[in-house]
Image (tube, rainbow, N blue to C red; front, side, top):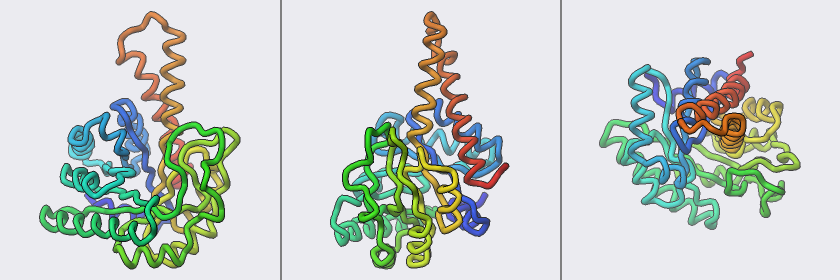
Length: 290
């Protein structure tokens, strides 16, 4: 099987993107995997620090590796939004395929120092264990929470989008494999509608850095914006809030209609199906599948 790096390169050459979806439980994993397997496209499972604490670091690795080995299927595991070196190190030591060091709140040069430390460790561990480990970093503020928002988070604006010259300096100084810029995207879903994405900024950053770019905060964005940004250099798209909402609403509806049902495997199945539907639609869009 190809490595995650090779699948990203393949997606870039085809002008498509790999879907990245977060999980907090087994139902979400099943829903995501069912959709990816149905469409026969690679997929990335993400766990933030909070999600990882709930699911279990080693448990998440075991689940994803079991699916990959059983079906010989390209499903990969990413430590999404880890905020310190020790947190990233623990995820990589446990067997994650990739990790995101999120030091965006630090001054640029401090972000560079911390990111490079994570990159250097990933290279060292990869060489020792014969693994190809990817490190991603964020540059530019897009908010912090995957939930329903009343308004665009304070500090997120066109003025704070990632500057190509900063991105170039950052990538050259850290050797990072992937970069998640601010291009109009926000974490979470804004009730009044998410801001528009800026594919022209994606293009400028991609030309300046020459490495694959990742779009965070994809939930709630317009389909045409996704397509335009993928065409300009986005190779991975993150979706989280959309599947959380779909899962919650489906389980809530089932229980309202079946108030006497107490078997989790019966009422949680509706959540799996809801997640699968959302993921399938997104994967079709990202992969250009009609």
